[in-house]
Image (cartoon, rainbow, N blue to C red; front, side, top):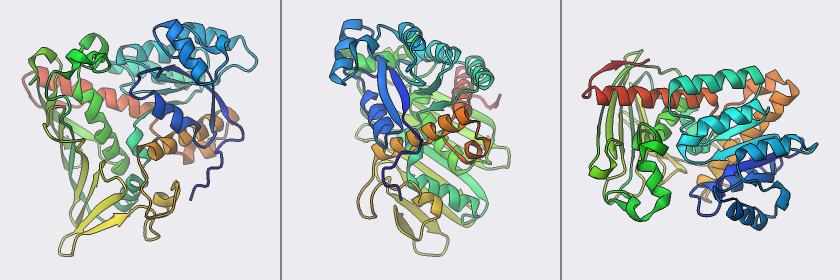
Length: 390
Protein backbone atom coordinates (compact mmCIF):
# COMPACT_ATOMS: atom_id res chain seq x y z
CA UNK A 1 0.00 0.00 0.00
CA UNK A 2 1.27 3.46 -0.84
CA UNK A 3 2.02 5.77 2.06
CA UNK A 4 2.63 8.96 0.10
CA UNK A 5 6.39 8.64 -0.10
CA UNK A 6 8.07 9.93 -3.22
CA UNK A 7 9.01 7.42 -5.91
CA UNK A 8 12.06 9.44 -6.92
CA UNK A 9 15.13 10.53 -4.98
CA UNK A 10 14.06 14.16 -5.43
CA UNK A 11 11.21 15.96 -7.19
CA UNK A 12 11.57 16.35 -10.95
CA UNK A 13 11.55 20.00 -12.00
CA UNK A 14 8.41 20.24 -14.09
CA UNK A 15 6.43 22.69 -16.21
CA UNK A 16 3.11 22.77 -18.02
CA UNK A 17 2.16 24.05 -21.45
CA UNK A 18 -1.56 24.79 -21.35
CA UNK A 19 -3.78 23.72 -18.50
CA UNK A 20 -4.49 27.28 -17.39
CA UNK A 21 -7.61 29.03 -16.18
CA UNK A 22 -10.75 27.27 -17.46
CA UNK A 23 -8.90 24.17 -18.66
CA UNK A 24 -10.86 20.94 -18.35
CA UNK A 25 -7.79 18.89 -17.50
CA UNK A 26 -5.14 21.26 -16.12
CA UNK A 27 -6.08 20.75 -12.49
CA UNK A 28 -6.01 16.96 -12.60
CA UNK A 29 -2.55 17.06 -14.21
CA UNK A 30 -1.24 19.21 -11.37
CA UNK A 31 -3.01 17.24 -8.65
CA UNK A 32 -1.68 13.94 -9.99
CA UNK A 33 1.87 15.14 -10.53
CA UNK A 34 2.20 16.86 -7.17
CA UNK A 35 0.36 14.35 -4.99
CA UNK A 36 3.34 12.22 -3.95
CA UNK A 37 5.94 14.96 -4.53
CA UNK A 38 7.56 13.22 -7.49
CA UNK A 39 7.30 16.48 -9.44
CA UNK A 40 7.77 20.12 -8.52
CA UNK A 41 5.91 22.67 -10.66
CA UNK A 42 8.40 25.50 -11.25
CA UNK A 43 7.43 27.04 -14.60
CA UNK A 44 4.77 27.13 -17.28
CA UNK A 45 3.20 28.66 -20.36
CA UNK A 46 -0.39 28.28 -19.30
CA UNK A 47 -2.43 30.34 -21.75
CA UNK A 48 -2.52 31.75 -25.27
CA UNK A 49 -2.98 35.13 -23.59
CA UNK A 50 0.43 35.79 -21.95
CA UNK A 51 -0.95 38.19 -19.34
CA UNK A 52 -3.65 35.78 -18.31
CA UNK A 53 -1.09 32.96 -18.22
CA UNK A 54 1.25 34.95 -15.98
CA UNK A 55 -1.61 35.83 -13.65
CA UNK A 56 -2.58 32.17 -13.43
CA UNK A 57 1.00 31.16 -12.72
CA UNK A 58 1.16 33.73 -9.93
CA UNK A 59 -1.97 32.18 -8.41
CA UNK A 60 -0.13 28.87 -8.40
CA UNK A 61 2.79 30.48 -6.58
CA UNK A 62 5.29 30.49 -9.45
CA UNK A 63 7.96 33.14 -9.89
CA UNK A 64 6.79 35.73 -12.46
CA UNK A 65 9.91 35.31 -14.60
CA UNK A 66 9.12 31.61 -15.00
CA UNK A 67 5.62 32.19 -16.39
CA UNK A 68 6.24 32.38 -20.12
CA UNK A 69 4.26 33.61 -23.12
CA UNK A 70 4.50 30.37 -25.12
CA UNK A 71 6.26 27.03 -25.24
CA UNK A 72 9.21 28.33 -27.27
CA UNK A 73 9.98 30.98 -24.66
CA UNK A 74 9.48 28.41 -21.90
CA UNK A 75 11.92 25.88 -23.35
CA UNK A 76 14.55 28.47 -24.28
CA UNK A 77 14.27 30.34 -20.98
CA UNK A 78 14.49 27.23 -18.85
CA UNK A 79 17.39 25.82 -20.87
CA UNK A 80 19.40 28.90 -19.88
CA UNK A 81 18.92 28.23 -16.16
CA UNK A 82 21.02 25.93 -14.00
CA UNK A 83 17.82 24.92 -12.25
CA UNK A 84 15.76 24.65 -15.44
CA UNK A 85 12.94 22.21 -16.00
CA UNK A 86 13.55 18.53 -16.67
CA UNK A 87 10.05 17.56 -17.81
CA UNK A 88 6.94 19.17 -19.26
CA UNK A 89 3.26 18.24 -19.56
CA UNK A 90 1.36 19.26 -22.69
CA UNK A 91 -2.30 20.05 -22.00
CA UNK A 92 -3.25 21.98 -25.13
CA UNK A 93 -5.60 21.37 -28.09
CA UNK A 94 -4.77 18.36 -30.24
CA UNK A 95 -3.43 20.34 -33.19
CA UNK A 96 -0.50 21.63 -31.11
CA UNK A 97 0.69 18.38 -29.57
CA UNK A 98 3.13 17.34 -32.29
CA UNK A 99 5.01 20.63 -32.52
CA UNK A 100 5.24 21.14 -28.76
CA UNK A 101 6.27 17.55 -28.07
CA UNK A 102 8.93 17.65 -30.77
CA UNK A 103 10.30 20.95 -29.45
CA UNK A 104 10.40 19.59 -25.90
CA UNK A 105 12.31 16.49 -26.99
CA UNK A 106 14.74 18.61 -29.01
CA UNK A 107 15.42 20.57 -25.80
CA UNK A 108 16.21 17.31 -23.99
CA UNK A 109 13.06 17.25 -21.88
CA UNK A 110 10.95 14.35 -20.74
CA UNK A 111 7.32 14.77 -21.85
CA UNK A 112 3.84 13.92 -20.63
CA UNK A 113 1.37 14.55 -23.46
CA UNK A 114 -2.38 14.56 -23.66
CA UNK A 115 -3.81 12.16 -26.19
CA UNK A 116 -3.93 12.00 -29.10
CA UNK A 117 -0.18 12.29 -29.34
CA UNK A 118 -0.63 13.87 -32.79
CA UNK A 119 -2.74 13.50 -35.95
CA UNK A 120 -0.90 10.93 -38.11
CA UNK A 121 1.09 7.75 -37.66
CA UNK A 122 3.97 9.38 -39.56
CA UNK A 123 4.10 12.19 -37.00
CA UNK A 124 3.78 9.76 -34.09
CA UNK A 125 6.61 7.59 -35.36
CA UNK A 126 8.78 10.69 -35.84
CA UNK A 127 8.25 11.55 -32.16
CA UNK A 128 8.98 7.96 -31.20
CA UNK A 129 12.29 8.02 -33.08
CA UNK A 130 13.23 11.38 -31.58
CA UNK A 131 12.43 10.19 -28.05
CA UNK A 132 14.56 7.10 -28.60
CA UNK A 133 17.47 9.06 -30.08
CA UNK A 134 17.42 11.62 -27.26
CA UNK A 135 16.87 9.01 -24.58
CA UNK A 136 13.76 10.73 -23.23
CA UNK A 137 10.52 9.38 -21.76
CA UNK A 138 7.22 10.31 -23.37
CA UNK A 139 4.15 9.42 -21.31
CA UNK A 140 0.60 9.70 -22.63
CA UNK A 141 -2.23 10.48 -20.24
CA UNK A 142 -4.47 7.47 -20.58
CA UNK A 143 -5.58 8.36 -17.09
CA UNK A 144 -7.97 5.46 -16.48
CA UNK A 145 -5.15 2.93 -16.72
CA UNK A 146 -3.91 3.65 -13.18
CA UNK A 147 -6.81 1.95 -11.41
CA UNK A 148 -5.91 -1.10 -9.33
CA UNK A 149 -8.89 -2.96 -10.75
CA UNK A 150 -7.33 -2.70 -14.22
CA UNK A 151 -4.16 -4.29 -12.82
CA UNK A 152 -6.35 -7.04 -11.34
CA UNK A 153 -7.98 -7.69 -14.70
CA UNK A 154 -4.59 -7.88 -16.40
CA UNK A 155 -3.27 -10.33 -13.81
CA UNK A 156 -6.36 -12.55 -14.08
CA UNK A 157 -6.09 -12.74 -17.87
CA UNK A 158 -2.37 -13.52 -17.62
CA UNK A 159 -3.08 -16.25 -15.06
CA UNK A 160 -5.58 -17.91 -17.40
CA UNK A 161 -8.55 -17.36 -15.09
CA UNK A 162 -10.79 -16.47 -18.05
CA UNK A 163 -9.52 -19.22 -20.31
CA UNK A 164 -8.88 -18.28 -23.94
CA UNK A 165 -9.94 -14.69 -24.65
CA UNK A 166 -12.62 -14.70 -27.34
CA UNK A 167 -14.42 -11.36 -27.23
CA UNK A 168 -13.45 -7.80 -26.30
CA UNK A 169 -16.43 -5.46 -25.98
CA UNK A 170 -15.55 -1.79 -25.40
CA UNK A 171 -17.63 1.34 -25.11
CA UNK A 172 -17.33 4.97 -24.12
CA UNK A 173 -20.71 6.49 -24.85
CA UNK A 174 -21.87 9.54 -22.91
CA UNK A 175 -24.79 11.84 -23.74
CA UNK A 176 -23.51 15.29 -22.84
CA UNK A 177 -23.09 16.40 -26.45
CA UNK A 178 -26.41 15.12 -27.76
CA UNK A 179 -27.15 18.74 -28.76
CA UNK A 180 -24.82 21.36 -30.22
CA UNK A 181 -23.44 22.42 -26.83
CA UNK A 182 -20.27 23.66 -28.50
CA UNK A 183 -22.18 26.69 -29.81
CA UNK A 184 -22.02 28.20 -26.33
CA UNK A 185 -18.88 26.55 -24.93
CA UNK A 186 -15.43 27.37 -26.40
CA UNK A 187 -13.83 24.60 -24.33
CA UNK A 188 -15.85 22.08 -26.35
CA UNK A 189 -15.93 23.95 -29.68
CA UNK A 190 -12.36 23.10 -30.69
CA UNK A 191 -13.03 19.39 -30.13
CA UNK A 192 -15.48 19.31 -33.04
CA UNK A 193 -13.38 21.45 -35.40
CA UNK A 194 -11.03 19.39 -37.59
CA UNK A 195 -8.52 22.24 -37.68
CA UNK A 196 -7.89 21.69 -33.97
CA UNK A 197 -9.23 18.21 -33.19
CA UNK A 198 -7.79 16.41 -36.19
CA UNK A 199 -9.43 13.70 -38.33
CA UNK A 200 -11.90 12.50 -35.69
CA UNK A 201 -13.89 13.58 -32.68
CA UNK A 202 -15.16 10.72 -30.50
CA UNK A 203 -12.83 8.09 -31.98
CA UNK A 204 -9.76 10.02 -30.88
CA UNK A 205 -11.22 11.77 -27.85
CA UNK A 206 -13.08 8.85 -26.27
CA UNK A 207 -12.52 5.48 -27.93
CA UNK A 208 -8.78 5.35 -27.40
CA UNK A 209 -9.33 5.24 -23.62
CA UNK A 210 -11.09 1.84 -23.46
CA UNK A 211 -8.93 0.67 -26.36
CA UNK A 212 -5.82 1.33 -24.27
CA UNK A 213 -7.39 -0.42 -21.28
CA UNK A 214 -7.99 -3.48 -23.43
CA UNK A 215 -4.34 -3.38 -24.51
CA UNK A 216 -3.25 -3.23 -20.86
CA UNK A 217 -5.53 -6.11 -19.85
CA UNK A 218 -4.88 -8.27 -22.94
CA UNK A 219 -1.40 -7.29 -24.17
CA UNK A 220 -1.10 -10.30 -26.47
CA UNK A 221 -4.12 -9.37 -28.60
CA UNK A 222 -3.16 -7.69 -31.88
CA UNK A 223 -5.67 -6.23 -34.34
CA UNK A 224 -5.56 -7.89 -37.77
CA UNK A 225 -8.25 -5.83 -39.50
CA UNK A 226 -11.16 -3.56 -38.60
CA UNK A 227 -14.34 -1.99 -39.90
CA UNK A 228 -15.63 1.39 -38.74
CA UNK A 229 -18.83 3.30 -39.42
CA UNK A 230 -19.18 6.82 -38.05
CA UNK A 231 -22.00 9.36 -37.97
CA UNK A 232 -22.49 13.06 -37.30
CA UNK A 233 -25.92 13.23 -35.68
CA UNK A 234 -25.39 16.91 -34.88
CA UNK A 235 -24.93 17.86 -38.51
CA UNK A 236 -22.76 20.91 -37.86
CA UNK A 237 -20.00 18.58 -36.62
CA UNK A 238 -19.49 16.91 -39.99
CA UNK A 239 -17.06 15.69 -41.17
CA UNK A 240 -16.18 14.79 -37.57
CA UNK A 241 -18.26 12.06 -35.96
CA UNK A 242 -20.16 12.17 -32.70
CA UNK A 243 -20.98 8.44 -32.84
CA UNK A 244 -19.06 5.47 -34.19
CA UNK A 245 -19.08 1.67 -34.16
CA UNK A 246 -15.90 -0.29 -34.83
CA UNK A 247 -15.50 -4.04 -35.33
CA UNK A 248 -12.10 -5.65 -34.90
CA UNK A 249 -10.68 -9.04 -35.79
CA UNK A 250 -7.60 -10.03 -33.80
CA UNK A 251 -4.74 -12.12 -35.10
CA UNK A 252 -5.55 -15.02 -32.74
CA UNK A 253 -9.19 -15.21 -33.89
CA UNK A 254 -10.72 -13.14 -31.08
CA UNK A 255 -13.26 -10.47 -32.01
CA UNK A 256 -13.75 -6.97 -30.66
CA UNK A 257 -16.38 -4.23 -30.77
CA UNK A 258 -16.12 -0.57 -29.83
CA UNK A 259 -19.11 1.75 -29.47
CA UNK A 260 -18.12 5.37 -29.05
CA UNK A 261 -20.60 8.21 -28.69
CA UNK A 262 -21.16 11.70 -27.36
CA UNK A 263 -24.87 11.56 -28.17
CA UNK A 264 -25.98 8.65 -25.96
CA UNK A 265 -28.68 10.83 -24.42
CA UNK A 266 -29.08 10.35 -20.68
CA UNK A 267 -25.81 8.46 -20.17
CA UNK A 268 -23.22 9.90 -17.80
CA UNK A 269 -20.02 8.24 -19.02
CA UNK A 270 -20.72 4.60 -19.86
CA UNK A 271 -17.11 3.64 -20.38
CA UNK A 272 -17.02 -0.13 -20.05
CA UNK A 273 -14.56 -2.88 -20.84
CA UNK A 274 -15.78 -6.47 -21.03
CA UNK A 275 -13.37 -9.32 -21.70
CA UNK A 276 -15.03 -12.66 -22.51
CA UNK A 277 -13.03 -15.86 -22.27
CA UNK A 278 -13.82 -19.50 -22.86
CA UNK A 279 -14.33 -20.04 -19.11
CA UNK A 280 -15.26 -16.67 -17.59
CA UNK A 281 -15.75 -12.95 -18.23
CA UNK A 282 -14.58 -9.71 -16.64
CA UNK A 283 -16.27 -6.33 -16.80
CA UNK A 284 -15.08 -2.91 -15.60
CA UNK A 285 -17.13 0.29 -15.60
CA UNK A 286 -15.50 3.65 -15.00
CA UNK A 287 -18.48 4.95 -13.02
CA UNK A 288 -17.84 2.16 -10.50
CA UNK A 289 -14.07 1.86 -10.85
CA UNK A 290 -13.45 0.24 -7.48
CA UNK A 291 -15.31 -2.92 -8.53
CA UNK A 292 -14.53 -5.57 -11.10
CA UNK A 293 -17.25 -8.01 -12.15
CA UNK A 294 -16.08 -11.61 -12.50
CA UNK A 295 -18.50 -14.12 -13.98
CA UNK A 296 -17.51 -17.78 -14.24
CA UNK A 297 -19.73 -19.97 -16.38
CA UNK A 298 -21.91 -22.13 -14.13
CA UNK A 299 -21.09 -20.21 -10.94
CA UNK A 300 -22.70 -17.25 -9.17
CA UNK A 301 -21.48 -13.89 -10.43
CA UNK A 302 -19.15 -12.08 -8.06
CA UNK A 303 -17.83 -8.56 -7.61
CA UNK A 304 -14.17 -8.09 -6.72
CA UNK A 305 -13.57 -5.04 -4.52
CA UNK A 306 -10.56 -2.74 -4.64
CA UNK A 307 -8.06 -3.21 -1.83
CA UNK A 308 -9.12 -6.67 -0.71
CA UNK A 309 -6.40 -9.20 0.15
CA UNK A 310 -7.79 -11.79 -2.27
CA UNK A 311 -6.66 -9.64 -5.22
CA UNK A 312 -3.41 -10.17 -7.10
CA UNK A 313 -0.44 -8.25 -5.61
CA UNK A 314 -0.28 -6.02 -8.70
CA UNK A 315 -3.77 -4.75 -7.92
CA UNK A 316 -2.76 -3.75 -4.38
CA UNK A 317 0.59 -2.12 -5.08
CA UNK A 318 -0.72 1.42 -5.62
CA UNK A 319 -3.62 1.66 -3.19
CA UNK A 320 -3.89 5.11 -1.63
CA UNK A 321 -6.26 4.24 1.21
CA UNK A 322 -7.65 1.20 2.98
CA UNK A 323 -10.40 -0.95 1.53
CA UNK A 324 -13.94 0.35 1.81
CA UNK A 325 -12.99 3.92 0.95
CA UNK A 326 -13.58 4.86 -2.67
CA UNK A 327 -10.68 5.80 -4.91
CA UNK A 328 -11.31 7.70 -8.11
CA UNK A 329 -9.85 9.30 -11.20
CA UNK A 330 -7.43 11.54 -9.31
CA UNK A 331 -5.86 8.49 -7.67
CA UNK A 332 -5.61 6.73 -11.02
CA UNK A 333 -3.87 9.74 -12.57
CA UNK A 334 -1.56 10.01 -9.55
CA UNK A 335 -0.55 6.39 -10.11
CA UNK A 336 0.40 6.94 -13.74
CA UNK A 337 2.20 10.20 -12.94
CA UNK A 338 4.16 8.31 -10.30
CA UNK A 339 5.12 5.76 -12.93
CA UNK A 340 6.11 8.55 -15.33
CA UNK A 341 8.40 10.01 -12.67
CA UNK A 342 9.97 6.64 -11.90
CA UNK A 343 10.59 6.04 -15.61
CA UNK A 344 12.15 9.47 -16.06
CA UNK A 345 14.49 8.99 -13.11
CA UNK A 346 15.44 5.47 -14.22
CA UNK A 347 16.19 6.78 -17.70
CA UNK A 348 18.36 9.60 -16.37
CA UNK A 349 20.30 7.18 -14.17
CA UNK A 350 20.68 4.59 -16.89
CA UNK A 351 18.87 2.06 -14.70
CA UNK A 352 17.72 -0.32 -17.41
CA UNK A 353 16.49 -2.96 -14.98
CA UNK A 354 14.19 -0.58 -13.14
CA UNK A 355 12.93 0.91 -16.40
CA UNK A 356 12.11 -2.54 -17.79
CA UNK A 357 10.08 -3.34 -14.66
CA UNK A 358 7.86 -0.28 -15.07
CA UNK A 359 4.67 -0.30 -17.09
CA UNK A 360 3.05 2.99 -17.98
CA UNK A 361 1.25 4.51 -21.00
CA UNK A 362 4.36 5.34 -23.01
CA UNK A 363 4.98 6.68 -26.48
CA UNK A 364 4.31 3.26 -27.99
CA UNK A 365 0.80 3.45 -26.51
CA UNK A 366 0.45 6.93 -27.98
CA UNK A 367 1.54 5.72 -31.41
CA UNK A 368 -0.91 2.82 -31.25
CA UNK A 369 -3.80 5.15 -30.40
CA UNK A 370 -3.02 7.32 -33.43
CA UNK A 371 -2.66 4.21 -35.61
CA UNK A 372 -6.06 2.87 -34.50
CA UNK A 373 -7.84 6.16 -35.20
CA UNK A 374 -6.15 6.49 -38.58
CA UNK A 375 -7.33 3.00 -39.57
CA UNK A 376 -10.86 3.70 -38.31
CA UNK A 377 -11.10 6.91 -40.33
CA UNK A 378 -9.73 5.12 -43.41
CA UNK A 379 -12.38 2.42 -43.06
CA UNK A 380 -15.25 4.82 -42.38
CA UNK A 381 -14.34 7.15 -45.23
CA UNK A 382 -14.27 4.17 -47.59
CA UNK A 383 -17.91 3.51 -46.74
CA UNK A 384 -17.48 1.32 -43.68
CA UNK A 385 -15.39 -1.46 -45.22
CA UNK A 386 -12.98 -3.95 -43.69
CA UNK A 387 -9.39 -2.72 -43.88
CA UNK A 388 -6.17 -4.46 -42.96
CA UNK A 389 -4.65 -2.91 -39.86
CA UNK A 390 -1.64 -0.92 -41.03
